[in-house]
Figure 1 (cartoon, rainbow, N blue to C red):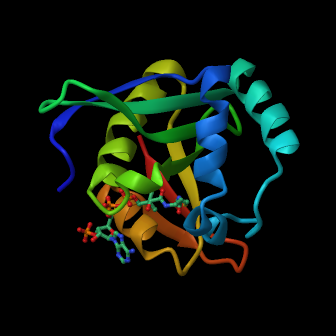
Figure 2: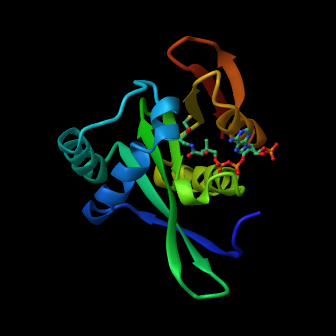
Length: 161
Ligand SMILES: CC(C)(COP(=O)(O)OP(=O)(O)OC[C@H]1O[C@@H](n2cnc3c(N)ncnc32)[C@H](O)[C@@H]1OP(=O)(O)O)[C@@H](O)C(=O)NCCC(=O)NCCS
C-alpha cells in the first residue's frame, strides 16, 4: 500500500496542464494509450485548455495529504467525457511516482461517485482498455466494470451506475 493520507478531488485548472502532460507522456502511459504515441506540448496545451472549460468534460485532480508530513501531492488525474446524456467515458492516469500502490482503484471508485453528482443523468460509465494493460483491467474490474467487447484499438469495459 502507498503512503497513508487523505485523498481528495478538485477540478483541474490550467495550472495542472504541465504535470498532466508529463504523466501523459510517461513511457507506460504512452504504451497504454490508444494512440500509442507521445503527445506534443502544443497539442496537449490546446486539448487541456478545452477540457477544463468544457461542460461535457469533468477533469479531476486527485490529491493526497500525507499524514506524516502534512504535504499535499498530486496522485493522478481522472477524466470523464460525456458521450451522450446517459453515459460517459472514464480515463485515468496515476502519477508515475504513485503507481502500483493501490491508488488506481481508489481513484476510480471515489471519482465515479463524483461523476454521478456532476452529471446527474449519468447511467453508465465506459472505459477503453488495451488488452495488455493488466493493472488497468484489474482496477476497473475491481470497481465493477465488465468487459463488453474486445478490439485491437482497445477493449470496451462498462459499468452501470
Ligand atoms: C493503470 C493504472 C491506472 C493502474 O493504477 P495503479 O495505481 O498503478 O494500480 P494499483 O496499484 O491500483 O494496482 C491495480 C492492480 O494491478 C496490479 N499491478 C500494478 N502494477 C502492475 C504491473 N506493473 N504489472 C502487473 N500488475 C500490476 C496490482 O497488483 C493490482 O492488482 P490487485 O488488484 O489484484 O491487487 C496506472 O498504472 C496508470 O496510470 N497507468 C498509466 C496510464 C494507464 O494505463 N491508464 C489506464 C488507461 S485505460
